Length: 274
Image (cartoon, rainbow, N blue to C red; front, top):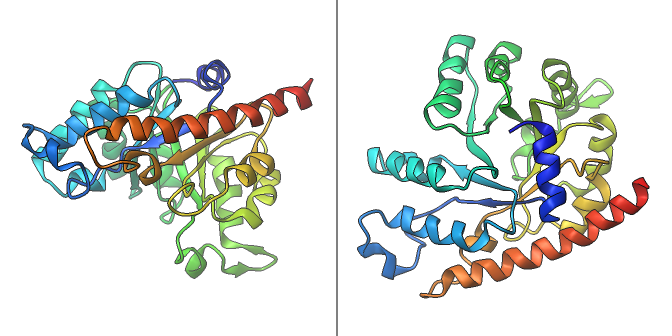
């Protein structure tokens, strides 16, 4: 999916919601465990309930890899079931020397046909560039994350700036607004406006809304640009909203609440641009 298609999708659905399919077999409703593939059965129901409200699905590969071949099969079924025209994210946080990164890129872009993959830039430019060689595919580079440990490295002062600022500035040079996004955690609200000034044109993938306590209002007012420029991810808050046989209805209700709030901010943006 190219940038303009993503922007058009956001405008059409009045949403920049990304639903995280971080599916833990220990947490899904018990009545699904009798299915041949319980994880896919759960994901299918969530997708059916939310596909008109979101513009992206993010699959955290760790929840699938831990189950071996069965997990990879569930992942493949899931990504193939997601309707065409919805942006797909492999949340795999890959990053290695160039030839290894090339194989990772082929895995997620060619074998599983995701639109994007999250990448870790710690090894530098040659670990990220292979992900940028695929037309209409995206690398989503870790920028400033929501976790407690982000301060261990990302918030180290290096001269007159933080390390994460150096990383963002480097990423802007490596990729373009057409193939590079950045992960910016929702709980880093004090930095959101500053980061948007550093990186005015790129999309941000923003995790941390819902269960982690990030504010959708803060994200939207501080980090939205003229094209929206945001994919706001909610995982547990949506997919585990209910645990009974009506779990998908509960998930839809939460997703709808997010989408309706997002529509308000998108209208404000459109008015401001005019």
